[in-house]
Image (tube, rainbow, N blue to C red; front, top):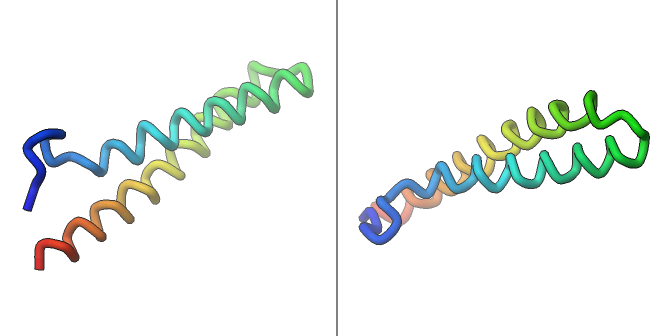
Length: 67
């Protein structure tokens, strides 16, 4: 059953979390190497991929609870 409090869209939470983690790591790595222009988009891309994995895992768990 979908939770009406958050709109029932828990999969998008994974994307937001992944993007935040990826952006943070990319910025930190870019600042450490002095090349933020390269590592920030790489971190964001990796974070988006991570967010898809987190979102699909949450969605899969949510579907299992419905049965």
